[in-house]
Length: 349
Image (cartoon, rainbow, N blue to C red; front, side):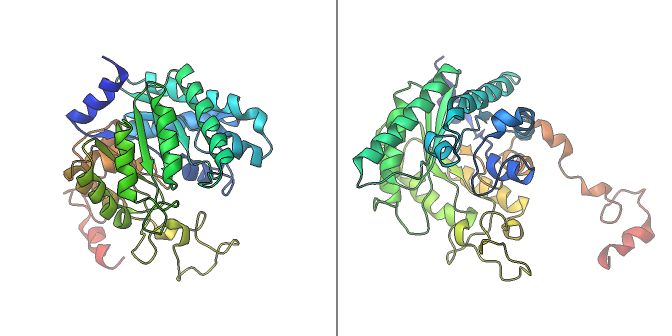
């Protein structure tokens, strides 16, 4: 069975879960810097990265995605560490491969993402981005990736370039768009039209990721699912975006008593604006009912969110052993051994 058949056959048979959220979660754990968001953790603290992969895997992730998001040549130039580019990529890929291999049936994915230098009017910049993608895809192939994930593209042209380069690897390709607050891609192409173009290029899974929470990702997801015949991916952020504030870049928090020093909630003061786990589960179920079988949660995700997604679409994970059991809670439970006088405190506690 080819790798392409393995991925598409798994998707044909049912949901495939892919964990994300490494940037935010590792920043919270103290292993990378917010703002820079460069995945040096793969070199400096490999055990921390491996541990997070394992936690996501236990929560139900079927794909171990190498943490090379923002691990491209331009980002490394920004922080003055271009010499670490290849070692960082290979380390991240090797860690992901080892974690995937520990659980039969898991896939390992290489990753490319938005370069943040794409310019629709500058062919030299476009060539530079293509070269960055090509070297990262080549390293992923050499390190044994089972598929390539391209994600968080807000320029249609960059998404198409990423798809072309990833498809040339011969591996299955997942490609997801990240529309900003305007209702089209940043270079003016329609969101659904861009998704259709990616399908025409032979991308195996086309969808949406990041920037938008469940409320503002779902309407576009419905349009894409209706317009495409290939598998569709759904990867919201776990934040309460709204029609007025459709992405997490400009979410407001008027109740905050202390504002972030940089003047916005993104990315370090979003905590009070998170969805709860049940909202993520409800989104996953609604997406699955639409015929979306490739599901995950993006920036802000924790293993708890991934477990909620997996269970919402009918899966039992290793971490399901520790799913909530409020029946035994000392004050809100129903176990007959619980003290009546303590349980009675529940409504006034």
